[in-house]
Image 1 (cartoon, rainbow, N blue to C red):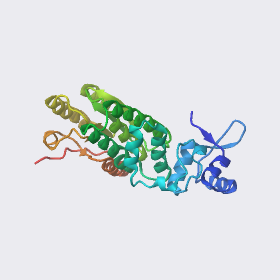
Image 2 (image 1 turned 180 degrees about the horizontal axis):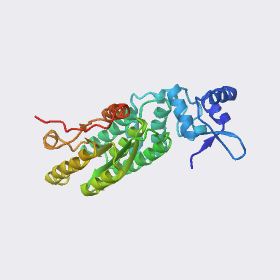
Image 3 (image 1 turned 90 degrees about the horizontal axis):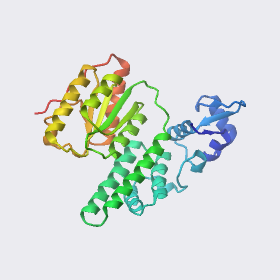
Image 4 (image 1 turned 60 degrees about the vertical axis):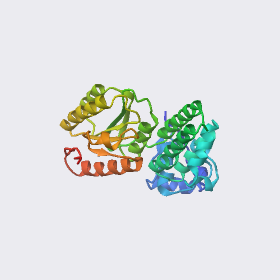
Length: 301
């Protein structure tokens, strides 16, 4: 159940008067619901949307059911990746939460938080592992911490209402779920009803999901390719199914080398989450202003 906040709680969280907060509700700047007793309440997701869009500083994050600090310097993205590495390897989940949610409350785009903090932090951890400066268990524990933070962040997003559906997954044998989950959150922030099918899904099962749900977009995060030939054949078959339903197929991931990509059929390749966000917004505008268009594969030469 969504957490509901009183106008007084939201006002105290951002350091304004309760009368100002109620006036903004009356003006429609914040959506409210009524309790059984007739009291006005604000869903926490709606309060966070307002804070981020209006660029209000949050002075009491916990009143908004958010982990975080009151350190304004912590809301700048510079050096956050290095701090994230230190806290992840130290198994300090609370500090990791504070880094991510301080940036979120400060209005930083989730795509930027993911590209410049979380993704970069895990690349740095991987480099430490290669230099024997970090253990495998530390990387695995870090992944679990990050997944819990992402689940919490997703729960704070305002549910999208565009009606545009995007499905996503990783291929069979690819258990790395961080990138595909970050993609889901980025797409939801861009107004898409993004639904993560899960990790290690066979191509035939993905095709059935596309045929059943008829999404406008299907995204695939590829961090590991167990069988290159089978992967190429499977993705190209999936593209054929998607094309018949005018579903855009978007791919990305560290395992997609230039050599592999030249043999694939797809609608778009995104090497960062910012690129995914930009493509999603472009596709949304195109879909909303006219009939659904056929997405042709990019030719490789």
